Length: 250
Image (cartoon, rainbow, N blue to C red; front, side, top):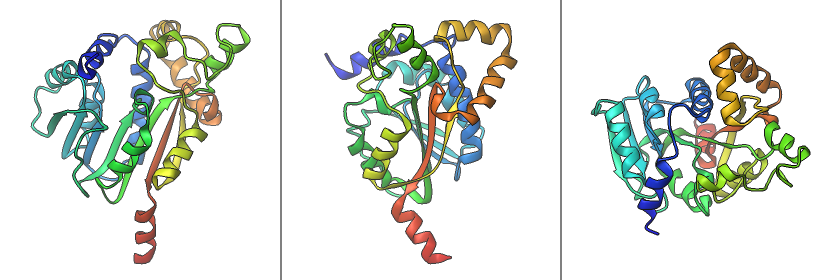
């Protein structure tokens, strides 16, 4: 199947009523305190909620997105803001400019490609001196996956769920696996964070959110104490050579 056609089919799965977008909101709140500058590269835009949020802080945003449907939806959502430039391309194929971006935002992306290591190596050159990459991903060792094992729904936290298959995930990650990938790609991890302690499936979590948003806020705060049990993990990193150059200037 044509890759773009496949990505457009996956795009049909997403809508604003999915709990993934509550997770996204909290990831962006973490980004607020971790961003380095205001020239952003966004790796994938989905339905545009993240792009619209990032415009609060951006001088410019380049978006590399494989789905034409997602580009169309996001363009409408941001009212064709001129600070945003879209590139309809696969992450694996795009020609990234050198030393252009203060921050690369790759939220919920590494699980969507077979081998993220070459992409991580390739996009590293696009960061300015001191620039940062921000990655989020569904956590294999999250509370709800652990519960699924004990309830007999899945045999292992590493087993693909029906949702993983529908969304076209190629792999399942925990913090340590991604940290290893980043190290192999030549990055130094600056910090990691858990995003929401999630005991129930997305549809049930969305019901809880509608009934009492403060409960979700509380689960986010508790998640700070138990990051490896959270639904998603946020990792902020910078190229190793950037760290070395900064040390030489101090």
